[in-house]
Picture 1: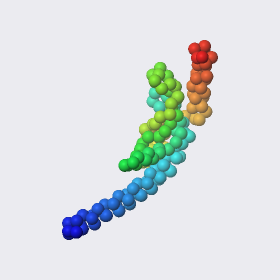
Picture 2: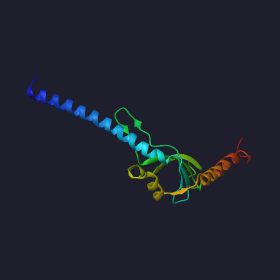
Picture 3: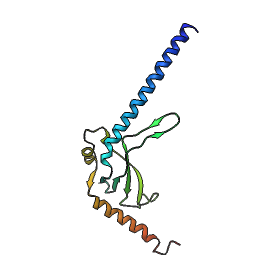
Picture 4: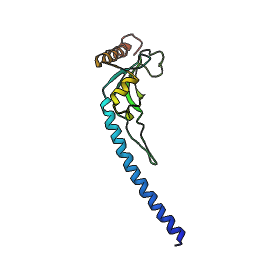
Length: 145
């Protein structure tokens, strides 16, 4: 083996070792962020358009063959649309994401309270019940068979 090949192999080993160390640290960082955001699960809010939502989970890691994806800025929510005609393609209730910078704030709870208007759980539950009543009434109008 030539000197160039020996140096290339040595560098390749260093690169591999550094990539493995980086991925381990990245995994630890993801766990830290998930732990931090876990405090938000169950909180209910209203957005600027008066749509209600409740945070239902923390961002999850998506594993693929060639990479690992994690978006700490998107929280899974149960979204209750106040005007279903605007979102007629998906209906009144959907599971989607909401954007927040809470993962990088010192206090994630205070951060999200500045981004959205917090509402009591009872207020969100009342909106949710209205949506369920609308869904239940679909079969009672005679247009469902």
